[in-house]
Length: 376
Image 1 (cartoon, rainbow, N blue to C red):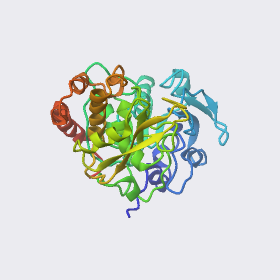
Image 2: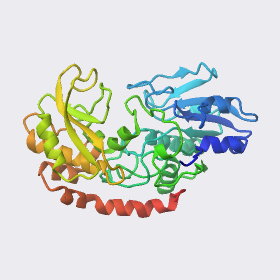
Image 3: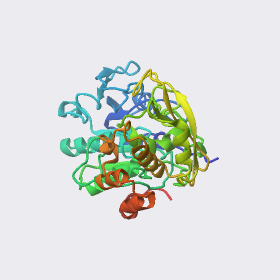
């Protein structure tokens, strides 16, 4: 097993040289912690020669427990204000930037375009550009590795869940994503990344020796994180993706589904590295809360061969074909953000045809991102 150090651990070993004598606005949550479990906020608050001036929190709040808009708060440990970037605002206001010199970003991402911690980083870079601040990213591993898969969003359709033109599974760390956004948007604000030590692109999170901390309330395991880029694509449609159960993103279902039939069709569609098993469940929150659902539970049998995007698209195609009276496609494109792929799913085109629609953009992205890579 590799011994991997996060960016915050590397910064501590350098005796906080990167932020010495500077007023820091720390963008973090419960995942911002050292290898041995100390909070990055507490660490910087007590660091000699460093003035921690304010805290900024992303979706789910500073403690990672909320699944709705989050209000501003006060951190009980440091007494500092916590400015929410997932509520009335999604980027820091001028008055919140006035007392800081540098934004320090330390949040664990999961490697998926529509996981909004990446969008928060982009908005921090925007604020730094506007208000003359610097940005320092304390990097962390991509827990599902460096593979790239899925379509880019359509031109002109960027949003908070599609902040930049990247594939659904982007294969980058947050530090590399910050470098890519900074480069491709022509930003001039100073940006520095404190790299992870000991991480390689082929490593999975359970090969790092780092403790798993749920990045958000429903992201409870590495396997949920690996399934999420595919199963999460279905989330705004009328199907439960397991929220309100003990296996979010590992199960899907609805009252109108025949789980045995769906499992049979999914297992026959040729998606490598995963099996579907029929299950019945009743979510206690979110879609179909309190309603008995039939569906499937996914088991990853070979994570190296498994492509979560293919699974998500195959699942959508089968639901559209077999459950046209129950399954609604109205919001299918909310997180996919690719009209050609959506239209091909509706037309029941074969998966290889659909993958051909975006295979070129995967190759193009690998070329674009080579300029910002920090790890082999």
